[in-house]
Length: 317
Ligand code: SAH
Image (cartoon, rainbow, N blue to C red; front, side, top):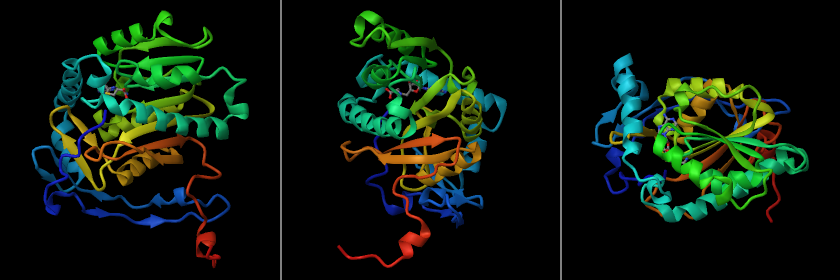
């Protein structure tokens, strides 16, 4: 869900800027700019919505989910927040229903590129199956996934959202052929879900991963890798901070930076195949990025130029 960048007008001292990072470029035929990898643990500072600052994410996680009871409370409050939200597009988009259109357009362009690059004949001769994680009322499935995939499963822990999704995606409310359908509706949170082995071409995770603590983030993706078909991929679409993290005490979620995500992807054993920045959102919102993640090392990634190329003399055009 799009989130307002609430620290926009605060003084620079509020911005979490303490990041230490050591990077190494991987040499060899598969060198790409996306192969830059974090080789030393980084320290990412952050703050919460009350202005409290944290030296690093570990300090925050210790406080928030440091024991069994705290973790149970964290997830209960996260779901509890959404249980009080209206089951509508405006509801799941935090009052920004009008970003639905640019969001879907941006996602569709990204998905088209991925299908064209990753699947023979853009997947047209294949029975394509997707999973929509933290699906809410089925907005992404209804406006996008169902038009490209033969089957879409939805996972959503808030039951009144999932019921609305069931309604919205009932065959009589869909304008697609009968070879495309919403197949399974799972009312479980991501941290408790294990997909059926090898079922999915694409696992779509949008605006919900902020609810997962780092350890559950990593174990979810590690488990979910087993749910991908060979050549399948994850799409993660999320709000980003420019630096560090911001913890929202109201809905128990965390907004991470690109660097923070990339460290987690490393821990998951996932590779960034492609990324794209979402365009056309209101300025007061956090920037939004799409990541395509694969289990295999990508041969080529977007925006990538090998070190040798970028250092080579270039003709001025
Ligand atoms: N992805 C949808 C909904 C975004 S709203 C869309 O883009 O329209 C955020 C969603 O995350 C809500 O539906 C909320 O119930 C869900 N959510 C909250 N905690 C979650 C968890 N632990 N696991 C999976 N989904 C969660």
